[in-house]
Structures are given as C-alpha cells and as structure tokens.
Image 1 (cartoon, rainbow, N blue to C red):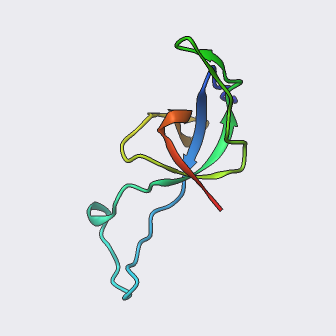
Image 2: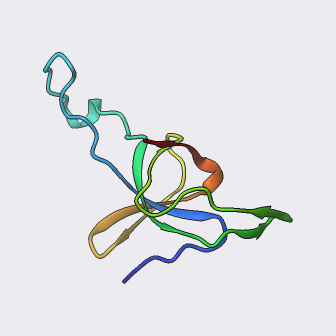
Image 3: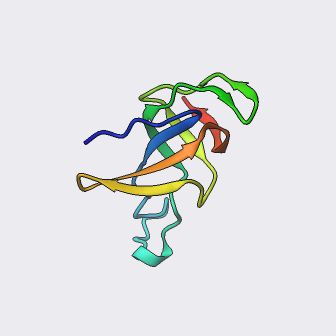
Length: 94
C-alpha cells in the first residue's frame, strides 16, 4: 500500500535519533529527543489551499527539518510515516 498525500501535505519518514552523545555516552530510550530531521517520501500536488495558491517547494528524497511534535503519525506495512503540511517544514537540509 502507498500513501498519496493531498493538497499541501507531505509524507515524511523520520531519521533515527542518535543513541550516543558526542562524548560517547549511550542514551537510554527515554533520554533521546524526538528527531527533527526526516526524509520526504511523497509530496501532494499543491494547488489552492485555504484560498491561497500553494506551490510545493519540497520533492521526494529531500532531507527536511520539521517542528517537534508536528503532523500525524501513521503506520503502513510496518513502516512509520508522518504526514505534515508543507508549512510545518522549517527548512531543507543540504
């Protein structure tokens, strides 16, 4: 099954959080921060959203920085994805 987002929505897959600090300390599961970097897996067509024309700025494969605790988390075929609006994406990481 595939996810095809509508309007200005983007499907992303979160990258794994670091398990060790720069000094080499291994973090417990509860001490890890929620990751903010994700990879775009699908992009909606854009168009008119809330009366305004929206052009999509991201594309599949882009690495993006998102706000913490944003979007809707879904699980498809054992994989976890997050669906966010393009406006919730803060930047493209190059």
